[in-house]
Image 1 (cartoon, helix red, strand yellow):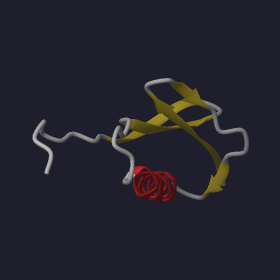
Image 2 (cartoon, rainbow, N blue to C red):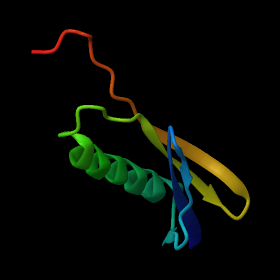
Image 3 (cartoon, one colour):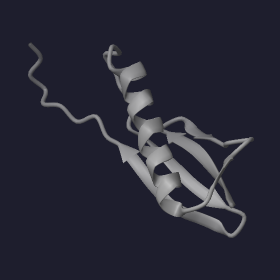
Image 4 (cartoon, rainbow, N blue to C red):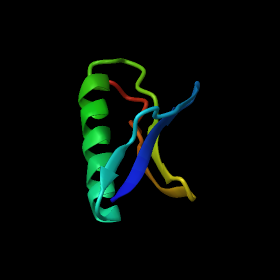
Length: 78
């Protein structure tokens, strides 16, 4: 098992993961990162100003991958 840390990055800075999670494969960590982003998207959906953010995943060796959530809409509001 490998311990993965899931740091959250947004415009105001980075929020390091202090606990981490253990997975047998990187694919399992990728699924966890995607599910985390989906939860964050639900939480931010009602805000007028939604920040772009990412989950930066690392192990003791260093950064492994990054998954991003980008809110991009046209200037026309309905």
